[in-house]
Length: 282
Image (cartoon, rainbow, N blue to C red):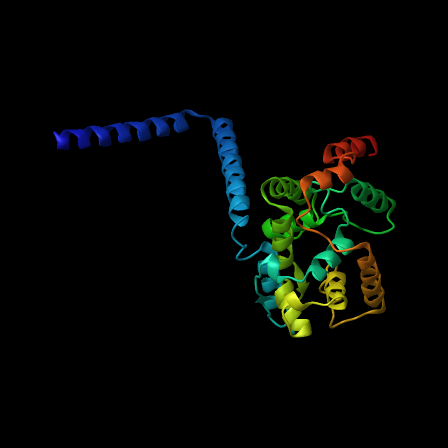
């Protein structure tokens, strides 16, 4: 009896496989192409959800930028191959650094849902006028970009970055976004995360960063390969001083209640508002 059941099961499986192959072979070229596209899209979508949920609890082992930089270092003559990284908990990062990067990179980080529409509009106007290039990215945007995507300036990358930004804002807390951001962001050539940067530039842990040191690291972020505490240009020094002056606004509270956040941001524009505004201002 047992042998007969096994034979029946194997027969059913083989019939199922046979039907699948027959259906595939019955499809024309466009039918196969369409099926391949939607199966690939569905797989990538499910993978993105799984990855974002996983990174809510597990630190990214590597990021696309880390791989990209390592390759650049390996192929360029005279450029040392360096990989310094050391993950730490948000509780082991000085509040001075959290405050410095928020005031430097994204003043509304605690209030928005991933996008600062006012900054996006300003960036669009400046880029269109040709005065200078600026991205208008929030810390959430930068976290999504650095954790999941290679660095490139294409519209497709911006669209995917926006998608991941929505995901992490929905599935992570603000403190988790900040924790991942400060642990994977580039602070110099081959230097990733605030702990490695603090040890490299100042010789102590990120938990002991002073306001001046925190401001120096925050001033590094827009262009870590061009300016950092080891290469202090006049602009860099002015930037550090500007960030330090903003500490008078008070420390950033990563654990601020959601009700208090809504009070400040409830009347702000959303990403959809920017989309429609962008369509009207082509």
